[in-house]
Image 1 (spheres, rainbow, N blue to C red):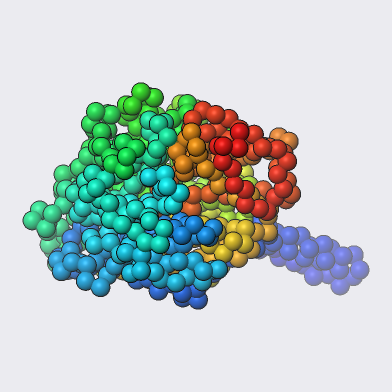
Image 2 (image 1 turned 30 degrees about the vertical axis):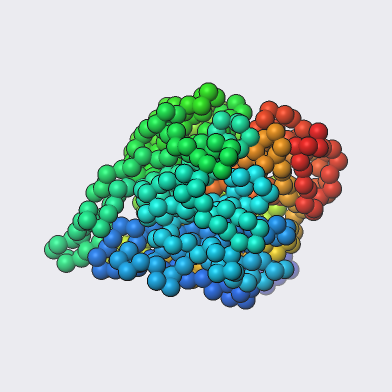
Length: 559
């Protein structure tokens, strides 16, 4: 802050000079004080107030077993079809003694108050849990759950009032260490396939001692101490069963996978796959349109950091942050590795982290879950990052880093990011061991709220107060020729020369799943001239003259 010295004069001319100088000084001060752009963004921790009491348990121990570091995910989804967003949390347990009392939890949303219904709905899970993704895999009109675990994954079919374990019946057999998963229709046959990212081949028998012998400090091994495992692609056979087709489809590269997102990076109408790997190059699987994928991470510029090194990829999400009509991507990384912002420049990507405001400020954090979302409804996608270290004793040998860390919120200012964490409300004042994150408008007030599942800590529901100062549209699609959830559909909002686009996706952030409906901030626009939809089937649809501040349901049958 500049310091301006005033020379006080006691004649009339001197007094005028003083007042002018004071006024200019105030202008300098006001210009330098961080703001939330006058949007009044305030996130409030309402977890307990709305009935959520979920506590994650990792079984953290002196043995420093690797799965204890990863934490678990969460999902916003409407399990009972009543139009509001319910919440599901994944728990882990204890690697030696088992689950014990530590179960997953399903909370039903009753008008903004949550009631736990886990036991009534048979949705507790029975393994050391990691991730969750919600999708209507059987096209019966309700959202099912796929759970990744250290150990066998699980598929819960939603039967309306409760869930049924369909893991074996569906032939979704994954006994590896599953991390993140995403549903998508890779072959455009009208049903949802499943991509599962696996981490490393860790067993209690292969567990190793890692640490600093001179300091008598034990810490968690990095993933390179164990063999990487292949990821899985499960093709939906349309009869309630799946077939694993990864190898024959070209999903053959092995990495220490943690994050995944499915997206149409090149705009050719089919779904590609991006995998964030821990301490290995990231993968971009380009869908060739004939049932196969080519791994082009290095060619695309998205496998490594800007200086050509692999990073410790954790969470990942896509969004058109620069509003140029294509989907960009963000990956969170380890401390002293900047979170990577990959700007889509057509067929190649530019690592624009430092150029667009995310690079330097992320170096002292260890990022996990991350999401593009418009927190103030101004029409620009902002960015949320959950942080937290993996070493619970990190402060004993690194005084510059803490185990618990604050989450970060970055405001998008026309394609440039500025951190506003300190101005974003009381929910951002506390520190956490942040892991999985998801968004959803749980209170139906026209702005997006956030949930964060924290390792060995209570979960946090952050209510967005003030984000709805701008207008908005929420758009939910239902496919008929396309998959019922319309995953892969691209929606464009057009008003004069103003254009915004989003793509329906299920599974992103880190081991988590956000609400299916697309949420668009409109700024001060009270209507939209045109909604244009490009369905996965290739059909294009237009709807004209839509008023702001409403939920819009569009079916492919409306053509």
